[in-house]
Length: 312
Image (tube, rainbow, N blue to C red; front, side, top):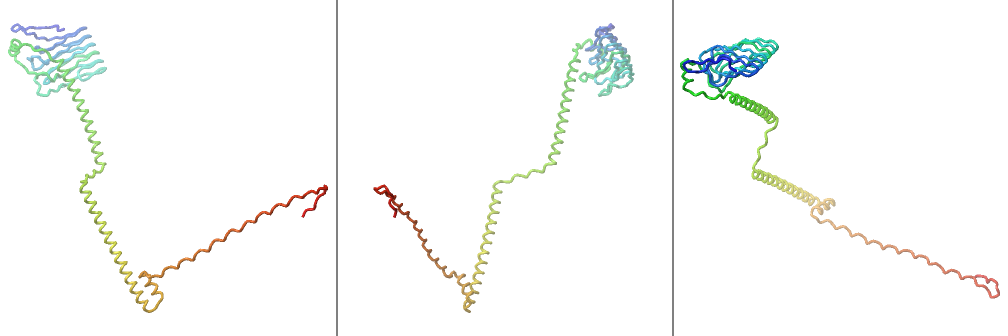
């Protein structure tokens, strides 16, 4: 818990300068007035100092921190510059950590706008940790006069702390942004594969109108039919001319009495003699008569006297 609370005699506003946690927690959230020197330590416990709604009277604030088997967390608005100067033994101090490290960095937390307040953190982390977190949803910090601070504390009701909700929203937003980045990367990979496939595949042939295709087919068929008819007419005319020339030649030769010319003229004019009828076939000879069997001889007869009678 906070071990030092100083009250302004004129306004009764609490000004806190020391937060020490021993086997417990010492946290400060909400609206408060930080002093120029602050002590934040944790011994087998945890201490959180939140500057999200703090009323700053000093442009530079120094935090002396010691973490022994515990953790000290400092939360600042987005336009506050943080300087770290500490050592870590088997622990972590700021952005460094390990068996033995020394952290001496300026402007570790780079503000989005010109820094109105600078917070310096010095100390040691022994098997513990001292770290800084930025509340990006907090109002920008600004240095106020003592009279303005007293007026705000006297007239304006203290708002409820929203730091926990702000960090939950930041974590959710970071998760959504990570998912959107992964989806964008997947879409870019899919687009690259599609572009490669499109480059490797020939462009599809545009479909033609079926009516135009039918008309083209009819025109082609008609042209082919007209050509075939013309070729057939030429062949017939050529055959007729050859036949006429041969007939005239054969007629001229037949007048000379040449038998071959006469025969050629008969073939051309279709007056060839009919082929002789075939001779009638001779009747088939009758089959030979089969010989008939003779009657068997009569058996010998026996005489009445008991002797044999000679056979004829």
